[in-house]
Image 1: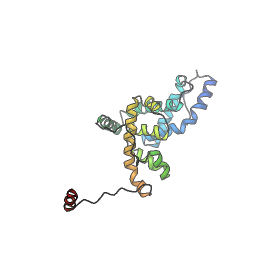
Image 2: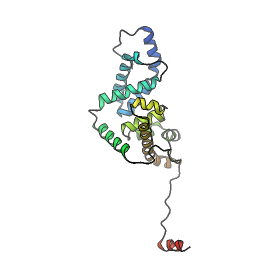
Image 3: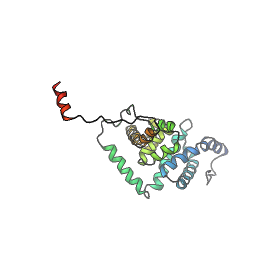
Image 4: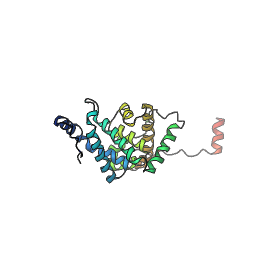
Length: 216
């Protein structure tokens, strides 16, 4: 997969810089496209479109900045342009994400509970990318992208905020909530694999025992 529709105004040096800098990121672009579209055929089309746009707008890339952040911004914007109107599921999930983010939740941006497996930990310990990718597909698109950028691509909050064009606080909220949903989805598999011990509820206290405890 290579960019088509070459811009004749790009000189040989710029073309070499593009090929050396952007083409090695093609697998990452395709991976993100696949997570967003959930279809290999659509991901290939999206990735191809992204690479064409990256080629055409290569002059706008600032040397010394993150090429991954630049490319993922193009991925997101191209995805929205191509799929936002047609993809009703994305619209519904996006509305759900906004509802969750506006809900009152005192710990929304706090640290994750100590027992919670991060997506990257779950991926490494379970030893299968397919399992976490399948769980990611069940998240709303904005949560999916925020978690993937943070835990798979290793971008900082600031870089993710630039890619997703939203405040850092929103990024933190989406990552927190996305990880929490992933924890719920991945927890049964972690228990099955023996990575965590399933918490057992304490047996109910009888009325007589409760009265004795109160008299003690």
